Image (tube, rainbow, N blue to C red; front, side):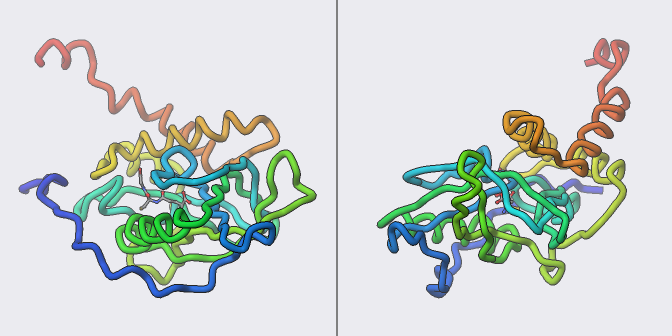
Amino acid sequence: MKQESTAQKAPPASPPPSPPAQHPRDDSDPQALWIFGYGSLVWRPDFAYSDSRVGFVRGYSRRFWQGDTFHRGSDKMPGRVVTLLEDHEGCTWGVAYQVQGEQVSEALKYLNVREAVLGGYDTKEVTFYPQDTPDQPLKALAYVATPQNPGYLGPAPEEAIATQILACRGFSGHNLEYLLRLADFMQLCGPQAQDEHLEAIVDAVGTMLPCFCPTEQALALV
Ligand SMILES: N[C@@H](CCC(=O)N[C@@H](CS)C(=O)NCC(=O)O)C(=O)O
């Protein structure tokens, strides 16, 4: 069966910018906006920002339950990326970025394409607790993939998610890079930042890698 190369799939033409929605503003600077990243945005924001904080949001758990046919997968082999699941007991660590002045419209225009159009994410206001000043929470904008979006894959055993991640790649790179960069970030956050779902997938990948790695004999044939 002909494998569609991701190189053949041109990204959809840029859509008209999203209508000016009401976004949470930074009380200290009405022109400023905080944007919360908890997936690829923690290591590749790719928009200009004035400040950033490591911290967490309460009431949400991070899950690899969103399919991705552009950045980390293809139409035939969709990858898995993260979204936020409402969970009363949940806590998700990430990075909040402050954008000010012209940075606000530039960031929103960029993220509308990257997250909404290409990724199926919608925006949601969350309360962000900076690691260093959790008693001074901030209102922030998060991009969340809800079960209603067409790319949503929903729950699966961590082993199945690991297999899918090992097998997929897209325009932004391999799905495994996405997983491991997020795991690296969580390591940097320290022992108080736990994500059992992420850890279980990383463990499953580690168990499966020998099956995905060529043996010496196979390499000798290259
Ligand atoms: N909205 C989450 C997840 C974002 C995310 O991973 N989105 C995908 C879109 S499907 C993306 O931007 N991928 C770019 C990449 O994989 O480098 C975040 O705040 O980080």
